[in-house]
View 1 (cartoon, rainbow, N blue to C red):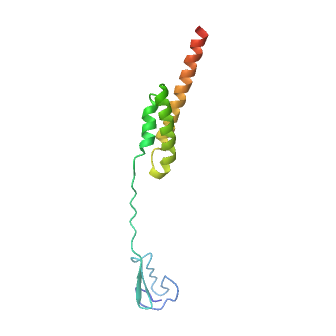
View 2 (tube, rainbow, N blue to C red):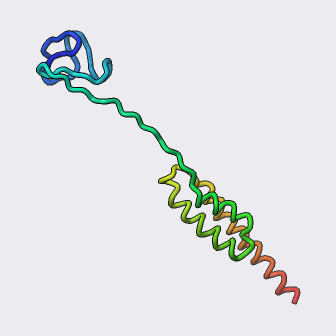
View 3 (cartoon, rainbow, N blue to C red):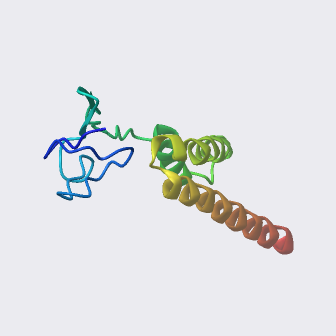
Length: 120
């Protein structure tokens, strides 16, 4: 293998011991191997951030969790949103808060039922 900068023989090393050129660090990823060029194309990583709709729906329905239908929907949507959070890279906190709203609603309803039975 030859150095891409000075052209001297460098053997199997990627860094030239004569001029110190390293094609990976100094250049654009091009190294010369016996007269042929080997190139590594640059990689552009684009993160697509999607909205976790299930976590958002579980969070919003959590405000109305005192209603049995919205409680069940909030719990289900928050659970699905929690497990989809890793794929979407968002929504884990909203799903947890949706679960907390459900738990608070259950506690408040249990306290109200207990007070109503004591009055009777």
